[in-house]
Image (cartoon, rainbow, N blue to C red; front, side, top):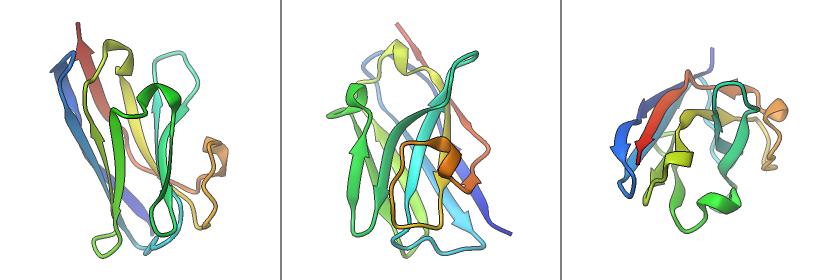
Length: 123
């Protein structure tokens, strides 16, 4: 059984930093696509950042230069470092993975999901 276990998140003031980690068990994702999505109450889940292959990354425009996604293949872990956080970054953040070396921005194409981590940024 594949599981994605998230850690991190919390409450921070605007301009602060948080780190989210996601560790997979039951499957080694290696070069497969792993990503972070976020969802605000009543809104669609949106792609935030993804990583695939040997470290090819893609970001939502509004988080570029502030967020960094990285992957430790040996630990089967993906991390999202979030700097210069803004109140509009407040959401529940979900780790996602798919058994494919194609990175997708479409949440429907991901096979596995973490439980969600709350990120709240106060102004």
